[in-house]
Length: 234
Image 1: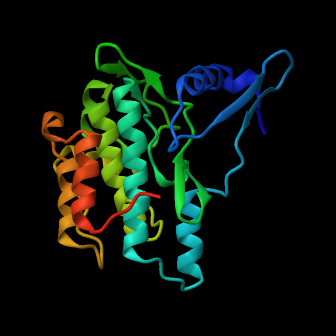
Image 2: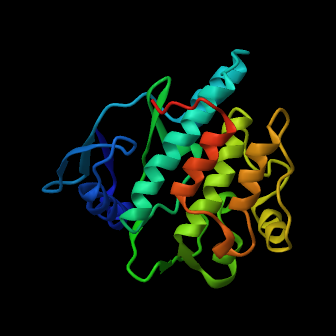
Image 3: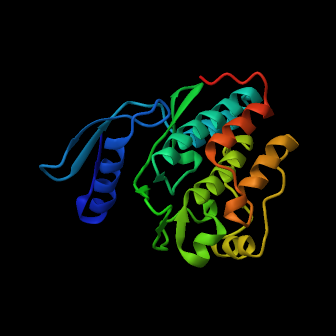
């Protein structure tokens, strides 16, 4: 169970509740109950074991190597959950390793739907502010302030770099402002060390300048299955 100060975050938490009420999938955080009668608003969810980003960084700090096949299982599971959201016409808008929670050390779920939105037209406006995950955002968001599922696909490509680098921050050598400028000018992160070219190719297609050229999440599941065979989802 966790609590939130309704005076500052009420709209986000109410939005998250509405989204969570609609979701039933093994790769998404389960909502058990909500209490809105008194302040602060409280949400009861299943108990998970911390974020994927913290787990990856902890393993790196302990010099514990996670097998590549397991890293790809994490990636596949996230793509599986996002494919469900895509089919439901829900934009996550904050897809990053910090918002992926571990069920066990071989299974994960997508969480943190505070920025998520339903979409009918296929796109939603997004207000630019300092709280947004700038380094995970697609270039068209900065120019048009419109968010589509293809922006979630871009974020997924960034998340793949987090997975393969044991939780390193993307664009670690750049500030948010210089990152935005570089991305708009066509810059893409280089291939991480020890990253197979086949996985980097998936990242690059997720970062296509033309959103229409980015694959959907069902297609991404297939591509990830090809990277490491046999790939058995947990």
